Image (cartoon, rainbow, N blue to C red):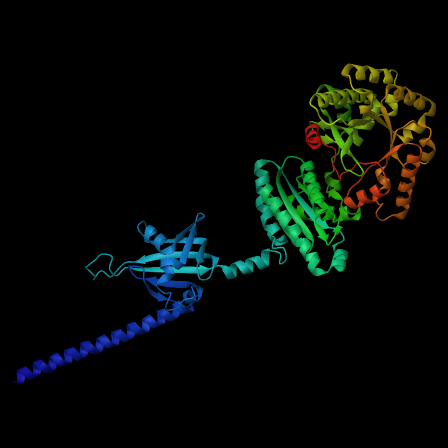
Length: 588
């Protein structure tokens, strides 16, 4: 009996001990689970634990907030409500996990997109997924007891901070800090491909005054519209665009082969800006000053952004709508005159000279009515050399006569080509030096070439400067009369730069007077220049001459000169001097 009592007591003690231990263990486990739950709930990442059949076992506070969790939609979150974007395709997240879990036990995606139907927006997230194997004590179904942990890190806060740091508040374009960060990569690419890289700094002219007239809202609308245009333009051409200051924009142009390409891009932007704003029935003509720096031509990479600002400052000081390319004194092209003198004779045989054409347009219709032929020398060592460098050398050596003949023959052949291919018939003018005028057989050579090419004489015009006309009045006038008999036209170029211009208007049998660029550079601000230009136009018309105004740089200038009743205009507002094929495209 005693033995039975002892056995019962021992059994009771054992049961009590086991029960107590189990209770303590459960309490410890409960405390640990509670600690883990609190840790998960403190996390900013959404953490979800799924069962082996993808039912939600646990969601922390962050996931409940992210998915707008409630008891009714708990089962639907993975069934219909949550999708992930992989390589431009959307997949329900549960299907995606089921597919990938066959391949590996864990995976992650950085900066991917998910969409939540109830939230109705795409979220940028870092997403990770891991499978937890069941306890080894579970011997039944191999999959029974499997758990899946999904962690989703919402990147919205990081993106907001990034955008505040690297993007402009108004236009949403990248800012200057982002530009500086991007430049290092772009410099490396330009080095790799041995190409130039250009920075275009664009500033809308007089924007503070414009804002005071229109108000902040309308001014901001202009900036946003201009920013959107630049953004689309750059996306189409693989450029980079930034909004560095309130009304200042930066374009980074990679992969240029020559500086002139950057200038062409600047001109396209200026032309587009002209028509950017209208209010009611009134149009507001906007202009932009543009500073350009080009690597390596404008200096080392560390100074390129500063040099773009310097070029912009220089452009703004020259008036509205100007373009300035930065070249410091230390890197200006220094031509070895001896090299150029030695290379000039061979330049003809090696076909290094090329004729460019700058359109002249009708003042009212803006249609191309003629063009000026201009010479360019593509030197094998120095590249494209400006005429003011080599023309004086040609005159000193007497080779200017040979160049004049080359240009005339080239122009006449081109006129015949345009005639055969039914291009628009326009006259072409070319400059003539005093040396050519005084060369024996000058007029006879022209007559011979006109006959050989069967070109109507009035399709060719010769431009002479008023200074040249004053040098040898008797001899020059005689040549003028001979040219007039041939039927070719005569233009008086650079008019307004001398002191005896008005007296020579009645002496020279010119058909056209070209008002020099220097008289119109400041015409929008200078009342005296306005009166002079208007007087020249009226006097020329009185004498039966047509007037071409050179150096027309923007829409404001064009409108003003048209109101003065000039006949034709020429300048970068319409087109710069173009190579043959580009000019032909313009003619089409």
